[in-house]
Length: 127
Image (tube, rainbow, N blue to C red; front, side, top):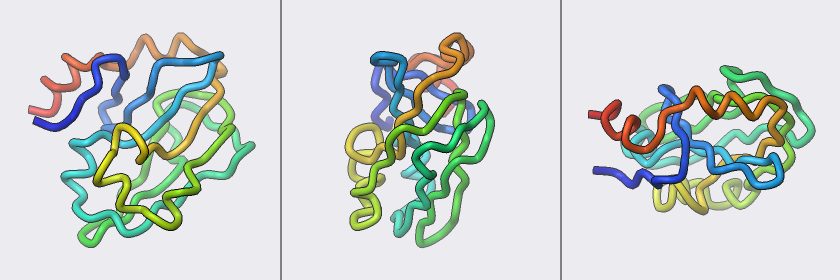
């Protein structure tokens, strides 16, 4: 089974959200999602300062076999993007739940985290 950090929350679209620190979460695609996509060759990052609502498409991940939208499961303002992915998009494959993060979002509604799956529920969802 893929890596599923226990303290993250997960969406049905295979995005993960880290625990909030000072109201900011980190967002990325799950290890399961990157394995389904195959070798990632490009990540279209969102713009810092943009606001997003839960369910919005905020980025795209392109692989040798497919392109996939990244949907945010939380609302807020994008406060940082992982610019290292411009040079090394394959980091999404090698460390999807760590160094392969996509952006950081300052939450406008922290209660949205309650509607996401915990690690056990996400693992079951992926079966």
